[in-house]
Length: 116
Image (cartoon, rainbow, N blue to C red; front, top):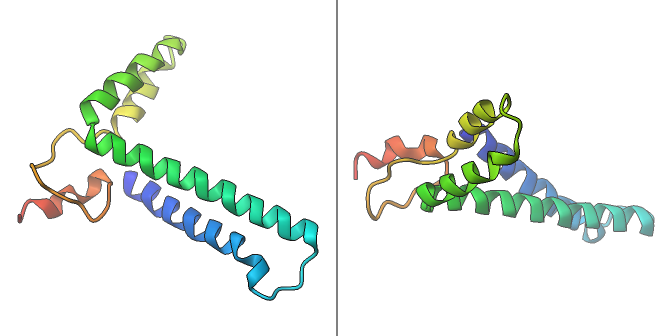
């Protein structure tokens, strides 16, 4: 599932870049539409980059981030908490060899590390 999220984040960042570049593309759009597309591109870019940052932090500091996230879930009703905790912990990479640098920050990339 995390691999699909990385794919969607990549698509979001490409889409955001395309929206920001609408004014330079030569497309004939009005100033209001151009402003809306450019603003939407910046918002989508910021959201995408923040999401990538969160995934990176979950990978780098998995234990600490897991404790903080699970601590923040205390506000949820008791019946929702187990499902949300399971979903949140699915993002945490429990094991990574020292010095490993993945091509992607997803936990699905870990099998490629086994070869060294």
